[in-house]
Image 1: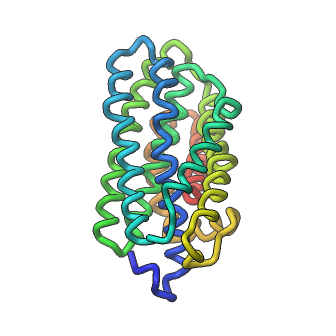
Image 2 (image 1 turned 90 degrees about the vertical axis):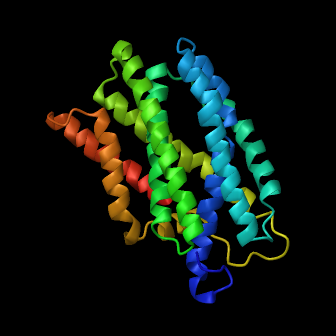
Image 3 (image 1 turned 135 degrees about the horizontal axis):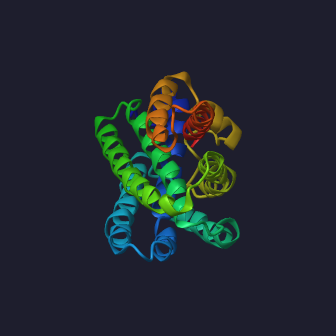
Length: 260
């Protein structure tokens, strides 16, 4: 990645900073979900063990790795204080925003989030100049792809009893990404703007401008291709109705990933 001090790359550096910081916040919030998920999967000891010993550790590890990079690249940003503000507000709204889902529905929702995370990290890795950062982002993307496959297997198991309709699948996948954009990103922006030692090295971004700058054409082919590959696992594509649902859901998650 180019130095944050180079004027020619300031716009790109600004978007990269926001994307990396938001990702680090969300990764570090994983412990807030593990206990509820372990309770939901009460009948699957192996899955509960994976949640505590692998998913929890790797997600928080991702957040800590990105935090270290942010500290080195933008030393005037007080990541710790910003994260405390974000995490505090996140915890306050969590009981209101999180509605209990069935095991199959929650597994599917988690598949959508893991797919989206893998897409975001892979698109970032393809478009940074820092080889060390690109390698880190690719490894994180691979981790999220493995997590996706674990939650997919959980979904397939629990859906044998629940038999979610195609429209339920679309609604679950799309609604979780809407919630991320509606609440989590707004909280992150509020925290980011108020925790600098001195002036920000670039002008502050409003969420709508962040979305616009994040959806450049250079991301779109990769994002759409991977989104369709992952989501195709949840629809029977020989059915016309399910093909249309699949196309819509792929498009919606791709657009959300580009703005995440």
